[in-house]
Amino acid sequence: MLHRVPSWLVPASALVLAGLVLPRAPSFGSGAGAASTTSAQKKLAEAAPAAPELPIRIGEIAFDEASGRYVAPLGAGRATLTLDPRLQDRLERALDTYRVPWGATVLIEPATGRILALAEHSRAEPGRRGLSLAALAPAASIFKLVTAAALLEHGTQPDEEVCYHGGKRRLAPRLLADDPRRDHRCTTLVEAFGHSTNVVFAKLAGRGLDASGLRATAERFLFNTEIPFAHPVEVSKAVIPEDDFGFAETAAGFGPVKLSPLHAALLAAIVANDGVLAPPVIVDAVAGAALPSAGEPRRVIEAPVAAELARMMRNTVSEGTARRAFARARGPLRGISVAGKTGSLADAQPYRDYSWFVGYAPADRPQVAIATVVVNERLWHARAPTVAREALEAYFATRVASAKGGELRTAAAR
Image 1 (cartoon, rainbow, N blue to C red):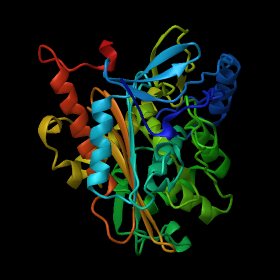
Image 2 (tube, rainbow, N blue to C red):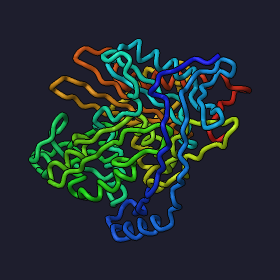
Image 3 (cartoon, rainbow, N blue to C red):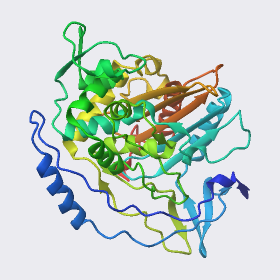
Image 4 (spheres, helix red, strand yellow):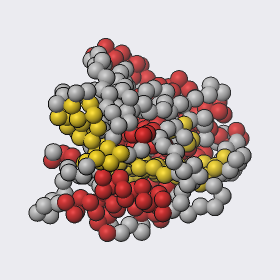
């Protein structure tokens, strides 16, 4: 018997991913490399294969009780989807339990792009659909992933100390200039990422980047472009100001940058997959028709840059802004290392508190990437890191329950 699911899950057509090129990462410890970056970009652009023009159209998604899977019509056939019903249900119930005004959690296999869950809930707007594919929230400090990648590619030392003062909550132009009389705190890029030290990111961006360079890096990370998926995903727009202070604010996570939960999960998946984007996939198999292609994987950043970002994301969970949330891990997640990045920002009128967590686990052998966003009003019950931790607990609980011989099923073993 088939049961219908919400209409937002009905894809219209697949979008194709093209033109993702990346510069060669300079060795850390050298400020050189700008000229070779341009050359590498041109070579990769010329070598990139043409994007396939094979749109897929799947019909209304339903749950098939006989197979225990989500299915949907695809041409003359029927597609079995990648969504995990147990995870989908548990993640939606968690968002409902916390009575979030708006929230969504996306789970993806980094190596394959398989979508395991697109869970969402809105207490403020009952019946609203499409939150997981909508750029509904500011990217906030999640954009530090892009800024950190650009800094590393342009020769910033990950462990070089930067001294600063102020800027914990807000930035001001005077904070971006070095002031030996007041700059009594010093930290590294790795530590600034983990603790989301805004002024350090603003200062480093002002020293080593410009608007066009950061914009190019953002577009490689899928900002300002359509994401390939079997349902239209709202474009995550990243406006990079040209003025010095506006640019520095944006690099630190305060700029006019929007992000969808699906896109956020892909950012984490890129780092987890050594810098390679596996396009998101929701069709697992097809009976009676050809299996559509989601496109070829694309390298977004070089492996050494991805490795440094991974180190920063581990630091976020072990020592930084996500430490408290993940120190309370329960069940099968206890003892599993997690890598991640938090983000938070608030609007005054009307009041909205946006919180993010993006990451992956296990940190040393990634199986799953996650993005959770929670949009709260003044009274709230949970923020994104807590909801994400519980989602990862649910993921590993389902893997333990279905494991045979004590081995967890991983993407690499498929």
